Image (cartoon, rainbow, N blue to C red; front, side, top):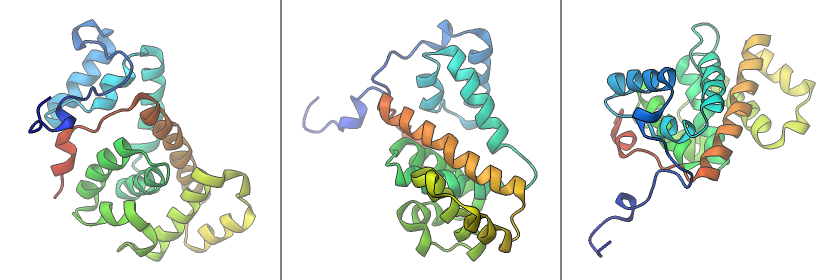
Length: 196
């Protein structure tokens, strides 16, 4: 690396081995190729997690179940949870990647940065703020969650299934954040420009 070469261009996307696309099981390769066709690039998370195919399948199945629901929370609200809790967990990959998705789903180029830095001052609704307060509690101090937390959410018209989803997304991405930090997963450069 010379003094004019950005360090990012020389760093690997994971500290663990990353399999070649051609060497992956057919179902995983097909899923990754479908994402590549839709997005125009392969998000590094797919390549990094493909290191362990069974875990890749389980991770993606739960991710899709939580994040692709049509009912309940909006897709933008689901991404808000990911961005806020990932910032609290200091997960660069998830803040950058899901921040890009949030900008697109919210149709707002500012909201992801606001939520990542301090959701309490972000341009979101009081209902969304209550949702993120609960998500943060689940992500950072789940042992303190109590009935009062549920009452606050019910006053904001969140149903029981919504509350489960808020908590499950925060908990699932706590796992994701830790795996991204464990592997030193690098965000793709493409994410930084999306939705701006």
